[in-house]
Image 1 (cartoon, rainbow over the protein chains, first blue to last red):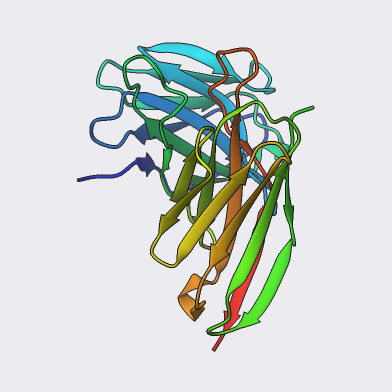
Image 2 (cartoon, rainbow over the protein chains, first blue to last red):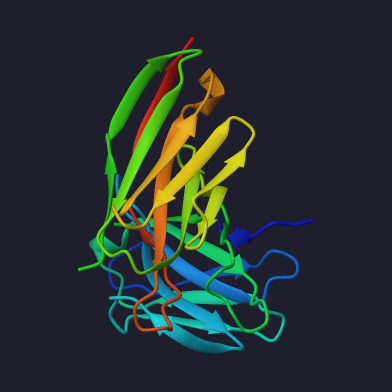
Length: 117
Length: 115
């Protein structure tokens, strides 16, 4: 049973560039959330996708955008990269039980380490 | 402001010791609380999930408790082993607004178990 998979594992970009990170949820899961984890900090919520729509967004600028596909996989796009965007980007998946997502545990991938120079 | 605080930030113990990690949250209206483990440079591994209606959850040598009235949770690790060395993160899904899906994380406790 495959868990949450993310690609690539590492990425180096230059300021001003754009980046796309990818996530495949755990088998049976239909909801994907993205988190940003800076060094020494806890993860910060970016947004969540369910039924191909953004359902909730954290305190991140519009440079951060996403997409969810019919097979539940997801992408995180970041435009106009800043040095401060350097972080570990984590994808988490879960499933809605009878419409109630709130009680479901999240399963995380190993993340994508983004370095902006 | 809905926050999560973890104390201590770092803990070093000898192998075999029982230990307690602490997590506090600022609003008692929560849906659930989840404890995670993170190895260096890796993703998060879910350890225990406690629903708001529960007082504790157990898995092997791990026991997590929840006291909503005091805004506290503890993770108890029995008979610690060097393989338990990792960062332990507490995350709360707050219930205000009825449509909050995000987890709010603490900064974690870095645990080192010495052989």
